[in-house]
Length: 161
Image (cartoon, rainbow, N blue to C red; front, side, top):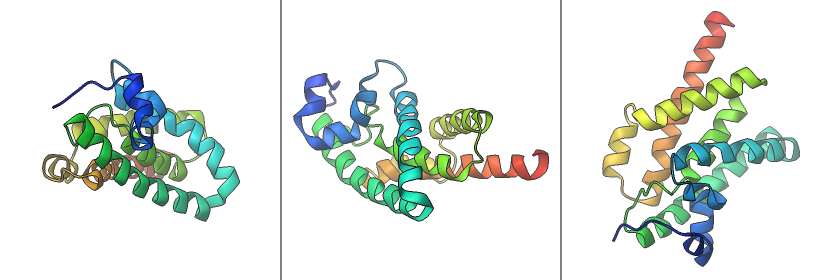
């Protein structure tokens, strides 16, 4: 059964709280966009504390945690990649924020590009989204969107920056 999660569902299981991005996934419209926004304060908090290597290791741990949480929550909601599951956007965009140059313009461009690539799902993201109906699949297609975002911004910086 495909259900709409409620605040009660959010706090019923730790996996739901994580997968729904601490509640961002409960947004009635564009939950993925709200989930992506969660990455900003997390990255701003974590990078100065953990440094580069620690931050990447943290993102890897959060990815693994997301595979579990997304799997549990998708099963409970009756849809493996339910729109309310936004932890994939959070973690993938945290990686984007790590690789882009500092500055508001870069952050805004990264946000817009990431949302574009997450929605459009260029190859191989669409294949992952359509065929990998697991917590790992939920998390992996957003890594593709993060890669395309980072690549586009790197090319922009190389040729126009």
